[in-house]
Amino acid sequence: MPARATEAAAMILAGGEGKRLHPLTRDRAKPAVPFAGRYRIIDFVLSNFVNSGIFKISVLTQYKSGSLMQHLARGWQLAPQMGHYVAPVPATMNLGPQWFRGSADAVFQNLDVIENEQPTYVCVFSADHIYKMDVRQMLDFHRDCGAEVTVATIPVPAEEMSRYGIVDCDNRRCVTGFREKPPLEADAVGTRQASMGLYVFNADVLVRAVVEDAERPDSTHDFGRDLIPRLAERGRVHAYDFSTNTHPNMTEAERGYWRDIGTLDAYYQGSMDLISVSPVFNLYNPAWPILSAYYPSPPAKFVFADREQNRIGSATDSMVSEGCIVSGGHVDRSILGPRVRVNSFAQVSDSILFEGVEVGRHACIRRAIVDKNVSVAAGATIGYDPAEDRRRFVVSEEGVVVVPKGERVG
Image (cartoon, rainbow, N blue to C red; front, side):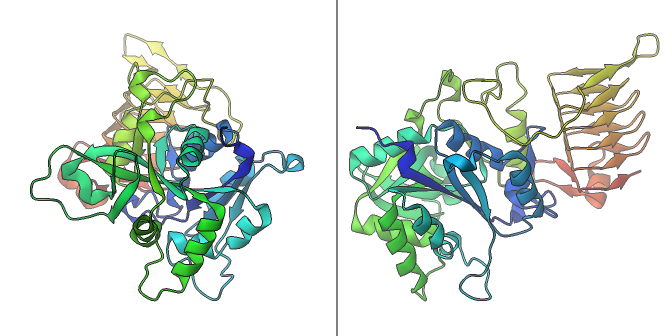
C-alpha cells in the first residue's frame, strides 16, 4: 500500500546564509535569490511538494529573511480552511538568545511544528536546489523498505566527492556509512553516491534524534555531519536513488537532473541550462508546473525595426519575463527578470539580468549576473575588460561578472 501524502509534513530548511553566492545574498537569504527570471530558488522545492499533494509545509528561516517571507506571503497562500499551508517559521529563539546552531538545531527549536501536526513522516528538505521530484515516490520507497530514515542520493564523479555528503550503501540500498565532505581519495575513480540534502524521517525517529543531538556538546547540530552518520551506524537508514524518480511528461534528458547552485558559477551554469532549444531542465511542462508569486506586470514588448540603423528590438535563445521592454537593443542567450529595459543599440549576451535593470543605449553586457535595480549607463561595458571588472565588481572563478543590487554602472 503506498504512503499517503496526507501522512507527511514538510520542514524546509531555508535559513542558509549563502556566503558563496555573495553579493547576490548581500541583502537576501539564499532561497530568496531570483532564478529563471520570475522565480525564487525556494519555489522549486515548494512546487515539488505541492505537485506531490503534500500541503503541510513549514519553512524554517533565519538570515536576512525579509524578502523571502514577503515572497511566501504573496505567492504561497494555500487553502487554510482545508489545513493546507506554507508557513514561514522564523528563528524566534524559543530556547534562549541564540540563532539556529545548525540544520538539526533548527528542527529541534521548532519541534512544536511536528507536535501540532502529529504526522507519520516528516520530510526535511533543503531549499537551495533546482530539481523536480515526486516526493510521494520517495515516501513509498521509505515505507516499503521499513526505513527509519531515507536519504535521497545521486551519483557524482569521484573527484568531486569532497563537495558532498557521501553515502555508502549495500545492494539493498541500506546505508552503511555517511561521510560529510570527505577528503578526496588518492585513487578516486568512477562515481560516488552523494546526498542531495533531502531526508524522509519517521516522525518519532526525527524527534528523538534531534533531542539527543541537542544534548551533545561535541555536535555541530547538523544533519549531514552529525545526525545521519550516527543514525546510519544504528541501521535502518536507506538511500533513495533519485534517478528512479519520475513526474508526468518527464523527458529522459531530465531524469536525475539536480543542481546545487550554491556558488556563483553553479548558479550561472544552472541558469544557462534553461535556455537551450531542448533544455535539460524544462520549465514549460504544464503537468508539473513551477509555481511562484504573481507580481502583475504587462506583457514583454519588443520595439523598433529600423534595419537601416540596425535599431532592432530582439531576443534570441533567451527567456524574457513579464514587463520587459527591449527597445531597439539585442539580447542573446540571456535571461531577463521582470521589468528589465534594454535600450537602443545595447547588446546583452550570455547574461542574467534581475528585476528592474535598465541598460542604456550602446551599453554592452557579456557573461554577467546583474542584480536588481542596477542602472547601466549609456555606452558602459560589463564583461569585456577583466582587469576593470575585477576592480569594480565580484568576478567568479570562471570569469562571470556579478554586479550588486542597486549599483549605478557608468
